[in-house]
Length: 124
Figure 1 (spheres, rainbow, N blue to C red):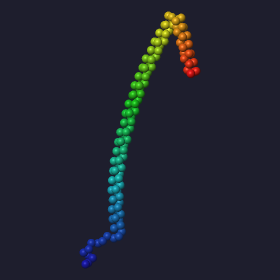
Figure 2: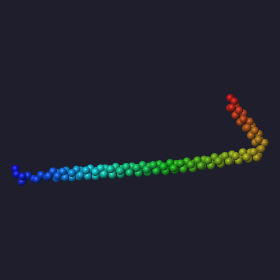
Figure 3: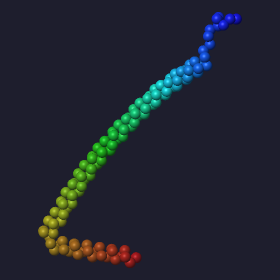
């Protein structure tokens, strides 16, 4: 066989350069695929993080609204209790003005009864 019929074989330097180029292309492809995967994962993470933040904000708003409603109900209950107490105190004042002797007798009897009960508790 003559050398003229066979194709010329690349030199060792050319083969090293060709292989280096293939490795660079393969590395580039792998890096690009990794970038796409990371970008997709980052987008999915961001979407989930935003959804979680939105859910937490909605829950916070609901809790704040419920607290405000409870505070309002409590305020109304306190106002109603205050009005009842003031009404009862006014009735007591009217009774004392109308019947001072009877009021004094009731107060003395109540004081005596309270003292007797407290003494019994202190000395079993």
